[in-house]
Length: 158
Image 1 (cartoon, rainbow, N blue to C red):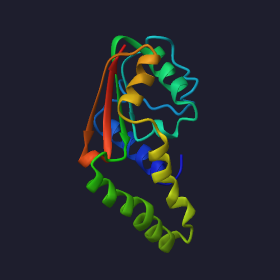
Image 2: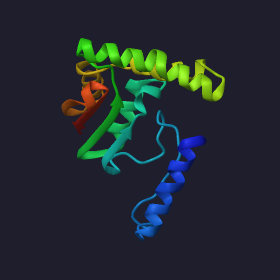
Image 3: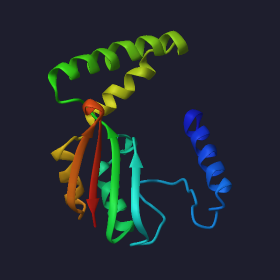
């Protein structure tokens, strides 16, 4: 973990400790393509803004389905490209030009800030994402676009 990810992990641990939930909630770091947990371990699996970074998305969904109990829920929140042409124009202006410009002003590295929109554009979205979930053995797949289509929540049941 590094940067904001490390800060977020520290904050999550602090909140668990404050609430006295150390025996209920634990955190682990691992390989999403080969989870160490036993089959049918969890009632729910969640991923926020991460599946677009999976090297092999279908394999990642198979692993998440494997560790879900029957009837368990998968919930994925992911950045997405707006489908409305007007919103998409402003989104492209912001993600392809403004973010890299400000990012390069702060860090001196423009290329690092070009990764985000490229990773969003590359990940399957909408019905294509649902098909990957179904291919992994999940059912009752649904998605809902949020924040003018800049992010989408996907759900499925094992």
